[in-house]
Image: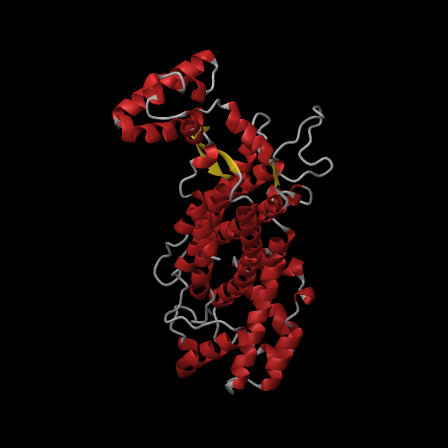
Length: 447
């Protein structure tokens, strides 16, 4: 029975993804442990350290479907880790002769860590593929709406005009950076762990480094300069990356959620029968996808400090830190991929209402152009005087419910330096977009 909603048969539909559960789940972990044990046997056989027949038998027996899970659970309860029970079952399945050479020269954490790396390679692949999809979808939106004028908002209020393409570019730019960070992280993460009890590989003598190199070759991993039994920085770095990605995704989702508000209505999640509906209010179309992006991102971020804390190991093998890492890492990856997978269809099918964006701009009575008018008057009146003129005009427009242009048009200080066409130009939102288009182009150039 599931305790964590992300692992439940029902709530698991909105938390995490089945793909990440398959990669980071317990069964996958056991399968990867068997894969490492088999690869170790083949590597040692090629080096002439164990019989080739034993390696073949171990490889043939390394099948997770053949494990007695109840017996393995009992052994794990007794030992604290599944490795001893797994090796015992693997040896029994491989036969008495091969059993002599199973797990030869390795220690428990060698198998656990290398198996974890194999899982993480798949997990990172899932994240990378979906990041590519998200980048492509955001790029389409940015290109399509580079000239779609809308209100830029600061402190939740209309501030200056921007374009929707510019807003999307602000979502896309950090996603591109996250993709770069993931590429940079991979080499630090995808390293074999084969170092023996305290990291010196004393059990294999002079052959130890050769076995480590051959095992890495077998699994297509690299060999670290030193064992990382107690150096968990690469694992913590992956967790921090997940936290950063979650924040990046949640920012975009939060913007979309706010744009979906009834009084705004400028963009919304793609419609689907019953999606975001209410049990009592038929008119509701809740931003449910955006909510689950944000909540999964926050939940993953809350677990990152646990991974950072799990970096502290005593001497050459820690007591408890590894287990703390195990409790957090899978959930961090599951929730992060859940946030990414939830945002993807929202962005790919985002409904953008350009007409509503323009109506919301116009509904402000031109006040959003106050800075533009002030800067237009400044060369003629001086900045301070221009600010005072526009400030008084804004107060009058608000009091009268009039358009800013109308109020300015009756001020002799304004009409003395601006004709009607000039004033109309200064109060047109499309005329005051600054470097918005250049920003879109610069972000798209990063592709």
